[in-house]
Image 1 (tube, rainbow, N blue to C red):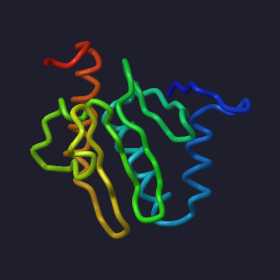
Image 2 (cartoon, one colour):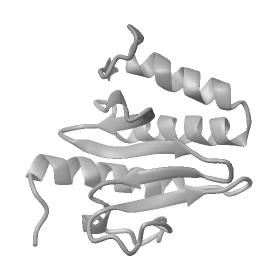
Image 3 (spheres, rainbow, N blue to C red):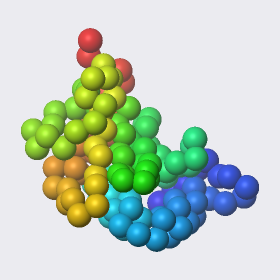
Length: 132
């Protein structure tokens, strides 16, 4: 697993692990689960720490992971170009380019459908810019 985006000498993976641990509740558990799904979907994913949040990249940003009081948000900057038959995207739907998945306490995500989104994002980044 490659890491970049070090902050104060710490590798991005360490910062992400630290963030998950310091949340210490369902949000940390959820963010950790989503991190594992991302790694399982794309073993070559690069973990970064940008804007104070975890970022997963492969040929460009795949998604970011943010924890709020009532939700864990996974934002795909090019999500509008991804096919989402399971309708996981439930936030930032009005955006022309990005899409997000908000997960709340007690909610579960379809792991296979989420991994399919990650793989599509990898393919889209590898293909260059999205189609107009």
